[in-house]
Structures are given as structure tokens and as C-alpha cells.
Image (cartoon, rainbow, N blue to C red; front, side):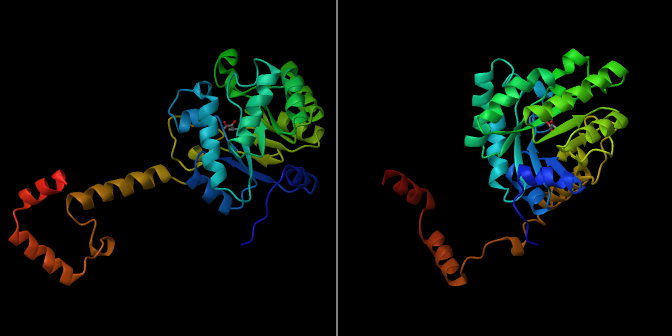
Length: 296
Ligand code: KIV
């Protein structure tokens, strides 16, 4: 299969053509390579790595350096998908200059092609400054996990008229600020549908129903690897967690019973030379020989 390099303009084009946009997270080289080979349009190096890779309770704990470290690993494995780096908590809300600098690190050091920020109208001046520095930006509104303490938990957003209107207006302002797409997370599907119809840039849903222009999901969730908790929208497309447990049990059994490694998985030594080794062992004092080697 010959794949083609994805760009932000092609992502926008897909919406115009009524084609769904398929996106997913990745955090390392091996996963990203498989995702890329699967013809996925966009890979987000999400700050969700804080939970599923680093084992933190939420996304707030991950640092810029950790995000860059994982972005580098992902971009080494990707040739076709568009790679987007997720700006972590506090990396873009203290001041605009610092936000631009941190966004630039994802491109310059991480090899990403765009960045994502959480927030609505209030974050538009920062988005504009990042775009002025020639960096492509993906927006993210709704249940933005960096705000969980303000929301009081992982709660679905936009569930009343005022909140839904605010989300719709935020979406329009993100488009106006220059975002090439936006994530809609944890909002009722009807509101996601209204937003999708109101903006020309693609909406990428997660817990936002099927009317979005595309979908995103955390790869460790959909593969059944991360099962600490399962939001309503998560569907297990595989149970790799169980496959891993089965494989590890088999590995343990085979090692304990000297079944693995067999000769097919071992390196061979030439038979003649082996005879020489055996006669050498018989003819020398091995302790003395090793002492001689230390003294050399
Ligand atoms: O961090 C992340 O993985 C995300 C997506 C789920 C949108 O922000």
C-alpha cells in the first residue's frame, strides 16, 4: 500500500469532501509505526500519556520535557500521518511568549507538525501568536482534562443552554483564530453536531458522538491495555491487555521448564572449535587463567 503524507490542508480538505478523519494518540516509536502503517490520518502525542504511560492520576503532572521526549519517539516512527504535540498544563497559559516558545519546542525538538491547546475564546490571543510564529494549531474544547479541578471531575460539558451556547461560540472563535481543526471532548452529540455544522474546520470528537468530522481515542484505551477506568465513549476494539497476560504466562512457564529458548532461538558455535574449547578447559587451571587476564 502506498501512503501519502498528511498535512493540515489535507485534513481540512477531508471535511470539505465529506470524508471522515481518523485520528488516535501514540506515545512511542513502535506503536506510532504500527498506527502510521494503518493509514491513520493524524497522531496526537497526547498529554494523556501522563496517565497511560507514566501512571499519574491525571494529565496535570506531565512536563514539557516529558512531552518532547515522547514526541521525538513518535515522530521517528511516522512517515505519513500528521503528528500533533499536545501542550501540557501551564506550558501555554502563563504568558504568550512562553507559549510560543514551548509550541516551537514540539516542532524544533520533537519533530511534530502542529500543536494542540485546550481552551476556548480566552485562549485565542495565544493561538494567534502561535500561528503568527508559523506553527499550526489544533483547538480543544468541552471536557478539557487540564481543567478537571475547575469542572469538579471528568464531567460532560455543555449540558445546559448557556454552556452549550458558550461551546458553540468558542468553536467559532477557535476557527477565527486560525485553528486547522478542533477536538470536541465529552459533550452531548447534538451540540457536537451543531458545532460541526457551524464551522468549516474539522471537528474531531472524543465522547462527542458520530456527527463530528473525525474521531480520536487514546490508543491504550481502545486496545484494552489501560483499563483503570472506562468512560462511556471508550470501546475496546481489542483486548491486548489479556493477550499480553496470556503471552507472559506462557513465557514464564517456558522459561521455568527450560522450553524457551530452544535451539531454533539459540546461536550455534562451530563443532570443531567447540572441541578445542573443551580440550582447553581440561588442560588449564581456569582460575589461574582468569587471574592472568585480570593482571594484563
Ligand atoms: O491527551 C489526549 O490524549 C487528548 C485526546 C484524548 C484528545 O487530549
